[in-house]
Image (cartoon, rainbow over all chains, first blue to last red; front, side, top):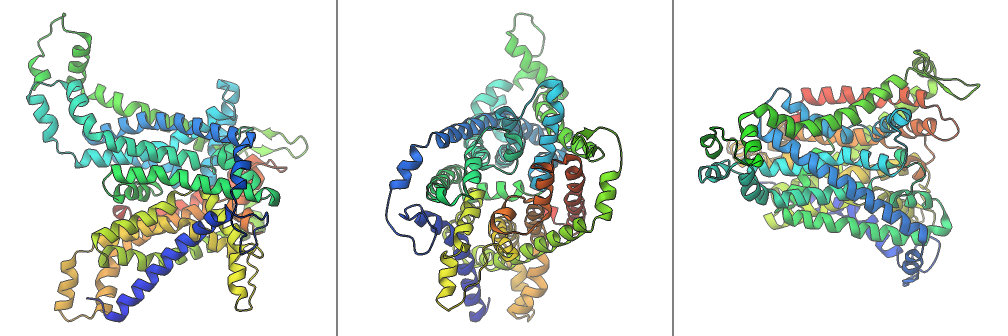
Length: 277
Length: 302
């Protein structure tokens, strides 16, 4: 349909965009094996020294532990809240149903600094009344708030694709509500729920924009990177940590992609995630 | 159905059975149970936070005691209205957001078009994953990658050095433009790709049958059909640029709205009320942007 010239132009353009997306990531990988402390090009390959230096850093390990704990807790809360909300929206027609997905997506759709400042003001004002302070608990509350939408989007998409005849058949065969839920609905949703949980974990593990305003003196892995990114002498360790974080965050996405069938599952979550419903 | 036929009450039925029968008959209870926790969480934590932010923007900082005074006043908003620096930074940030958005749409078009309309299903899925992967890569790692790329003696400098040119981008607003365009690019590609996929082939065939060449078909048929998707995509790059406060100080020396708010909220200034008032600027801009986007049917394209 397109002329030959257009086809070639589109191919070249697509290739350039793809290169733009990947060259910086390749640079991260290459520099992790750099012998030199400076960031000058070309890097002096090849050494694994900085990996062992990073591994022995106690502060770094502590930050990693905090990040994992926060991500697990936030994912747990998001899993329950996101799944429940998706059942409600899928099953019932009620006043303001469209507003639900809008509210869920709001923490991610609004400019990051606004969400960060709002949550931090709320923690500050509730310190005297309920004793919530900046730290791990505040991080978990904040992360859970914007992870809900990831689980919700995944589960609700699966529910929409599931024919209602399955639950009807189960109930006709004598299964009551809980039995049908346990033996028909849940197995059908399992992969969508796991995919949602993986994405929520990834989102929380990588988060810094809001975390920086809630952490107080607590250090997460992204906060550690932020603290050391400006220090030239720590550049080699940051290089190594950057590579590790890159690999660690790709694995859940890869698994989630397989669980949802195609990349579309992950992609549609993202597409909806950053924008207002 | 099972629960309905077992409805006649019998006290000996196990509690679980009775609970499920109750839930089946009382839809309201079921709705409360499923929607209640999530909705309360979002209202109590998020909407409450936004309300606190709004309220605190009317408080003031006592310059002598450095304490926040909880009395209502419009002083922060007056400060913003009369301070040219706030207008200048807002204008600069909006221009930056527009430039980033334009760049991303330009870069997204060929890749999205290729993946949606020219590639085989297998290549399409591979490309989709190739776009999703950098999207989920850590934000700071991406900023750091560009810090290395653009740094003095870095790869970009070395590359252009071959041609005898040293662009010296490392701390200009240009580097912020490049970095933000890079970080938000996947968010822009995905909705545009989806929009291209929704264009029915039959429309293009009809246009061809009626004598339109490919250029005309693209302008008259494809472009109007993908426009809502493009507008939806720009919501991301625009909002994310307005809300970013970390990349600016890391890769440039330019003051943008996000890091102006950040500097006021923390650090030595510690003027949270004024920061809250200024954060109403990106909020208002996004509000207007979303209204325009809705008028252009962008929400249906999400």
